[in-house]
Image 1 (cartoon, rainbow, N blue to C red):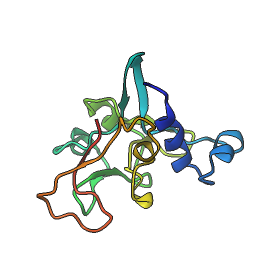
Image 2: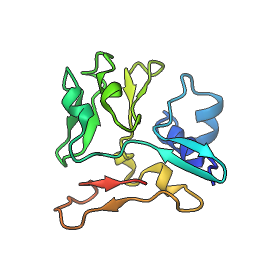
Image 3: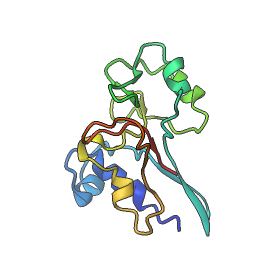
Length: 150
């Protein structure tokens, strides 16, 4: 339905306070949502990292800031990022954004790993967003192996 609650809860999940009121009224700079709702009602979709099997952002990264974690998921290390934007150019989905407000060069979905479930999925009122885990792969407890978010 394109309500945008996924964007709201993504901001809250990446805020310092983790409180919806404080995140929007008091925290500056406010974090960027790692998901963006696009479309014209009644058709809409959430655009975010698709966690590709062979991500071009990782291959294109000059510093190793975009890399595979121990579970084989592409993630971003803000400490290594120099802000060249190569990952943004190579992402075929446009899911990586410039995020200079937070002191990071880019922002991309991190699946809210610290929370266990992505905030966008947990708070979607119509359950339009979901996580699909490949059960054939060995998935450590609490860590995603391969996820697809439509």
